[in-house]
Image (tube, rainbow, N blue to C red; front, top):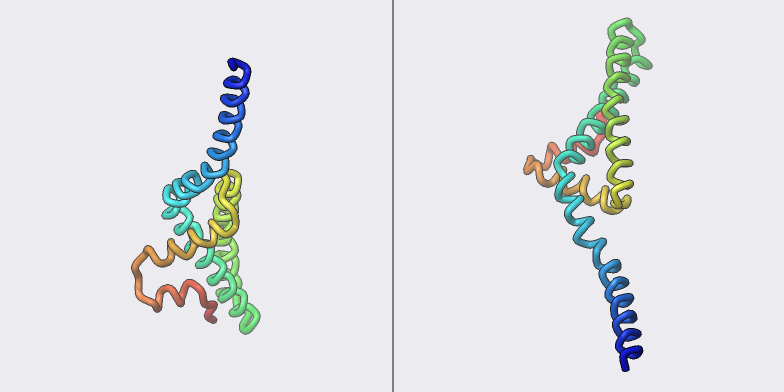
Length: 129
């Protein structure tokens, strides 16, 4: 009788452990996403803006290679350091347990949470010259 109870207790413990492991991921990811949402949104915005400015500056250099446009391109290249910070932050979040879908969702929520007009959302996703 004691041996049967011991096995039942052991089996129950194993099943409970597996059950907890299966559902632990959901609240953990939810907490991470909520905690880092604004920081991630800031990194997304800064990197998008830096890439846009770099493309615009590069296009201007190609169309008219004046010293002013070359200086503007050099400044825009320095701005790409924001993308390096964004990439490091993404890797940190992935290391903490978030995946690409989680990060995509956070990026969209960050854009939506700024409660801006539709035009600003469009500007964040378009590349203009």
